[in-house]
Length: 346
Image (cartoon, rainbow, N blue to C red; front, side, top):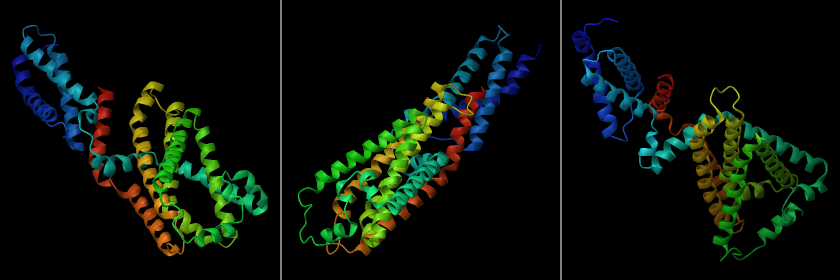
């Protein structure tokens, strides 16, 4: 291939200088993110410079230019393939307002599957109680749920003193530990190709459906809502999110429709799994506090209307948070995806 070297360098130098300037900005400002147009431009400049390096490598008379281009290409390659999040200091606000809700929405189909399986379990549990009431002694794991709901409500409402006094913190810690353990189990069971996760969600749904219908049939719907909504509006979605993480793990294990190797699939989903289970843990800490310090107090201590309103508000705010928060950062998300694509095609 014959080219006019001086003219070639003169024509290409502006592109090299532009790439050099972008690299300097990225290297000096570790928190800086390119928008989508800038990412496309960066990829174009990287590919053009790499092509120029290949063309000029045949000219032994230009070792300085060749080394300069090699340095540019190597730096650009490193920027494309690095995990910039590792270099950046963790920011909880950024994680809470962008990373967590965006991760949830990215795997929305897995979440929908967890909801469906739990609802099937609820329907089964309700059907068992409706057709064979004594069977609740078999399917419900707690002794205090085996008796008459009306008797339990009467006992709860007859209490005239704070029976949780001195035990709230311990009870709250036990709830947190147990629920977090269940959530981690739901995630870990994804290694069974998701079957274990689905079974756990189904069983939780069976318990929920059986308890709910048992109280409704006994005419204690208001008590049920006042008891479950304050903590359940956070606790139940948290378990569903843990199931979502388990199904994401299962999808990575199965790899249906993916061109990546098993190791690559696990590496790609690992940050999302950590994000989801961390969010679940935070939600369950809150739910444990609410259950110990709020849900366990019934009339006449706390009116059911207040407890129901509180739980409903929590649920609405959680839905808004998961569905809407972080949607303004689309450019950053697309830019990250584009950088990944650029690395894959280089």
